[in-house]
Amino acid sequence: MFSAKRGASGSAEPPLWPELAGKTLGILGFGHIGEALARRARAFDMRVCAVRRQAQSDIPAGVSFIGGPERLDDVLRQADYLAITLSLSAETRGLLDERALRLMKPAAYLINVARAEIVDEVALYRTLANSGIAGAALDAWYRYPKAAGPTLPATQPFHELGNVIMTPHVSGWTEGMLDARATLIASNIERIARGESTLNAIDPVSSEDTVQGSSRHRS
Image (tube, rainbow, N blue to C red):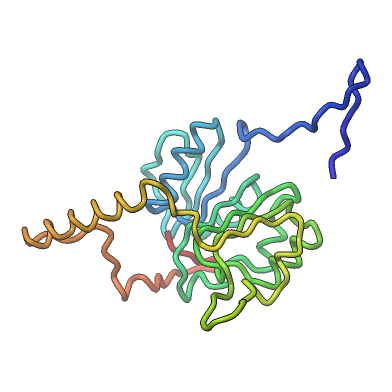
């Protein structure tokens, strides 16, 4: 808990809140979501660095680098805030294990809006419980209800920790979401009618993202 300071008049002063300006945002996965996140981070004068399946030489303004898997450890060490926007695959499952989490700053925050299993569940819980990082915002759960009755979001008691914010996979449930979804569907119907390829198509073979190297993930 923060302790309130006393001003010259003896009145209690509120604690100083952290600023995003000048902080580093690390993004794991630089697809559509990662790119949109980087644009918003730049508006707050944040430094942005990212990793994806393959290094990217065409770097948007305000982004320091977009590296391949070999830069994962660099991003983990530098990030004040780490956003996970990867898809879950055989290559990304457990990507952030105990070793990887130990590379993060004790003052860093982890934000997972992708899939829970990208981060090792037990390692993440221990890291948060032992203040290995400052906190986490989790919109992706390790367990989802499969029958009537209550279902805890994980085998570990994340909900008991004071440095964790948990939301039930609704971070994308916004006012514009339904309109954007309908617009995309209509656009793809028109593309199919014209004999063109659809937007946001997923190749079931390449989506497994077989990546060479010790650190693997997809963009």
